[in-house]
Length: 126
Image 1 (spheres, rainbow, N blue to C red):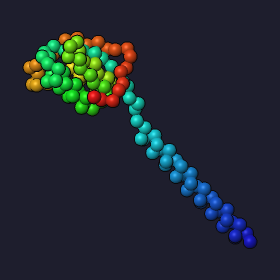
Image 2 (cartoon, one colour):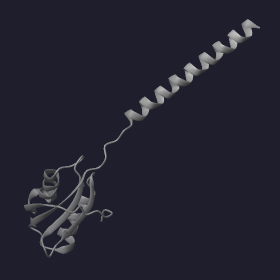
Image 3 (cartoon, one colour):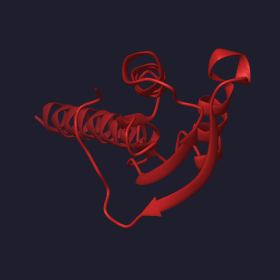
Image 4 (cartoon, rainbow, N blue to C red):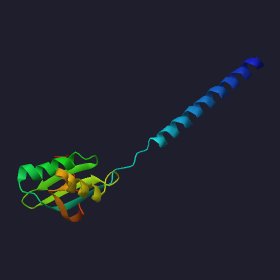
């Protein structure tokens, strides 16, 4: 009888230890998969060199909307301005300016003024 009780106590001890090890392992895995939350910022830029609505403004808007990290892209030909919302963890203002200035080999468009917007504009990418 003593052997059966001893065996029973040992088996409980062994199984409880293995459960504790599994729990500790799963907690470590959760900590390693933690992601950084997005840090959205919006800016407005004045763009020189646009000569038409479809060929220029839409081209800039399209190219910027395809950048990883840009969540909003809108270019207004008449106002000669573009508004962009981006994840500051992935991009910077400078990345956006360089992208605009580099379209068409860097010969057509130039960002002349950058204004950071207080309110974040968020919409699906156009």
